[in-house]
Length: 307
Image (tube, rainbow, N blue to C red):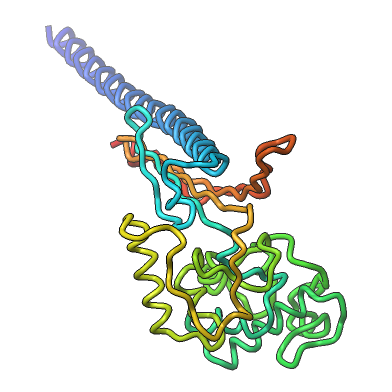
């Protein structure tokens, strides 16, 4: 009898251990399944937000191609235009490249003005501005505060300047004196697509306006206030105050190259933003040409989805 009791006890312990093992395996499988579901949802949300952002870009292009757009102010103001596609919140904004400083064309003083406007001291601003010009010019003659091949090699920064025009704004990150933080501060205000030495004050951001040498800061404030009123429909497009004494630095050229920033957000919180630069050529073989495309931001966190 005692032997049978021991056997029954061992059998019970074995069953309990087996149940515990099955429970552990089930919990592991459940967690793995939840993770797989989260990954699948993440991939689906990512695909949806990317396509929704692309749809917003196409809608923005149609606005640019329309000779009488419903919201002409949006083209000049750069403000976000929101709308819905299904349950997704989508928006786009249009920014004229003529309102930015062209790093291939801008004179030294305008480049220095921008660097001062974003907070650099005079000596550093002069050094970085000259290094930008040394990068883009075709010779090996160093600007007063600049950097040519010898300076790059001495600082162990590679072969040196390309001695050719910048191919993209991102190339600024290779210029001596421009670290990641300075690039982050500069990049919203510069371009390689305006092809002019001046900026258009009707579309230029406030920081760019303050970069103009000799500009009256009070006039800049008045102009910005008038533009905001225009964006709210309180004034007519084109009727804006002018900046005095800075004609050599400004242009009324509106150009036909724009950067479009499109963002899509789903109820789950997943979002995606894309920036594209397009040349609008209505009436040509193609209505527009894509000059550049880059991901601005993405938020498809598996952790957040799993919750």
